[in-house]
Length: 152
Image 1 (spheres, helix red, strand yellow):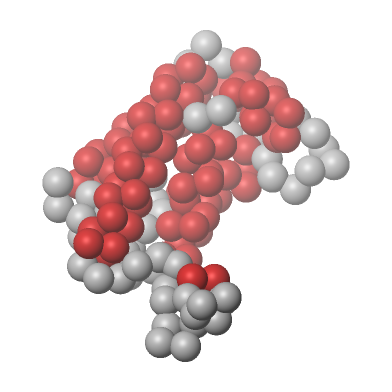
Image 2 (cartoon, rainbow, N blue to C red):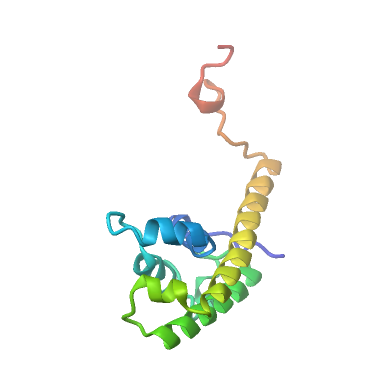
């Protein structure tokens, strides 16, 4: 696995939670269907298809919000699964129609696999940074972890 690094880490901070939300039917029903909440399916779709990635053509996101070719491949699979549901229920359908679609399980499964890979890739990148001498939290000469003075 080649980690291409992330040129736009702020983008990834939006993409990973959106993928995790798509992998969680409980979250979808409790949050997306609650009209008092900000997050819904449309928000998640905008994150993954418009704003921070392009799930229809994720290769362009490699090195920006996606770390590996495997992530690109799985994002494309997620984009295809979502497209199948959208073609079936219609682009303007309410969130409930998407969640009740017989094809929605394929979206959840694709998102779950992608979420697993993305989190694993981030943990490996963090491990590699640590092994290269970049500890977390950062330690300075005057302060230890979390900004605590040495010896306190």
